[in-house]
Image (cartoon, rainbow, N blue to C red; front, side, top):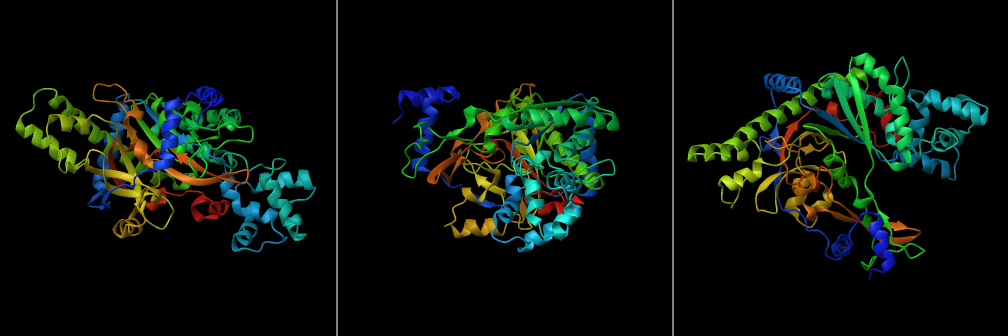
Amino acid sequence: MLSEKDLQQIAQRGISQEQIETQLKEFETGFPFLRLEAAAAVGNGILAPAASERQSYVKAWEAYKAEGHRVVKFVPASGAASRMFKNMFAFVDADYDVPTTDFEKKYFDEIEKFAFYEALNEVCLKNEGKDIKTLMAEGNYKAVAANMLKKEGLNYGQLPKGMLLFHKYAEGARTPMEEHLVEGALYAASNGEAHVHFTVSHDHLDFFKQKVADKADGFAKKYGIKYDITFSEQKPSTDTVAANPDNTPFREADGSLLFRPGGHGALIENLNEIEADVIFVKNIDNVVPDRLKPETVEWKQVIAGVLVTLQKKAFEYLSQLDNNPTEAQLAEIAQFVEKNLCTNPKNNKVDADYLRGKLNRPMRVCGVVKNVGEPGGGPFLTYNQDGTVSLQILESSQIDTNNAEYMKMFTQGTHFNPVDLVCAVKDYQGKPFNLPDFVDKTTGFISSKSKGGKELKALELPGLWNGAMSNWSTVFVEVPLGTFNPVKTVNDLLREQHQ
């Protein structure tokens, strides 16, 4: 099935023949659905700390940073913003010329509220010889939209989301990249330094670096810190081969194999190369203006405080396990694993080896918000490969839609995953974990795509906060809805939270 030319192409990407054969086999067999125990809820897998507890967690986090630990803010920022503008691309290509859908009407009715309005007005003047108001008065709405989207204008249809102007300020509009630099200074800085890491696409790397270089010094002066800002790209070795509907390799017109990015799960490799004790993970588009940041900052400190408090206890117990613990100590450790780390042994034998395995692994605390109907994953108590039950973040694709009980759990779940993580990635002896060792490889998924008008199957790796972190210790904390303000469409920027 694979020719000598194929093997050369595979080797050039740093992928082994065995990996490709495994992927092609996965197209045939598919991935098993996960077995669920229950949707997580407050009192059943989700912590909801009271005000006094929150204060103690914030203090624990401040004390941890004061000890000199290295903290990094990790921001997946490689996605292009094209999906944000799907409705506006459709308008430019439509067979009508004036705003017709509710989405189009809202965009043009409130266009002056966008942080990019001044920049768009300038390119309209340059390219059309008229400002936005004149173009709209003449009914030339499409010229306005085209100047936002196209390369000769703002090029927002192709830029990464992190480079778009999101929020207005007196001193000038800010991009999400800038808002993340501010956040890094406010809750992730230690020893007078904020370490921020962006994963970016190869095509936008130089542009991203230049924009960061232009802005970082101003924020460093404002917050009295130094920035250490680093970048990485998704590795070609994490791409996956595409298949035809009959599960044979999909080939380009020249006969070569088609490879596709493996999804955000590929970033576990990037995360694994970060030198840190604690890593915050948050999506590029979930940012707010400064006036709303205090709530976000407080809750980031809270979940980080929960993490370091639990980690400290886990490290104490691991030291005990190295020194012939008594039966009473084993019972106490077992209770911690089950109660505090929400890992139920089920039919597993609870001995020192079992407890060591559940404690000596990466740990993450995930903020979750009340479910208000946003698309995406949620927190569940799920059966693992070893028969234990623990907390996981699941996507709808991992759940058997023919199982009425599971679908009820998913649709009636009380909470949603906003991708708000803080991770501890070193063991109790100070050595970094090799994070790919903790991926559950059976949790990938297959989707239908097309290329050049031909149908194909695409394989996504276990998601970064799903199967890629499946074998971590996981704890969920309820955080306020105000800390979750994603921008999925351009009109989301008109929400009060982004004004």
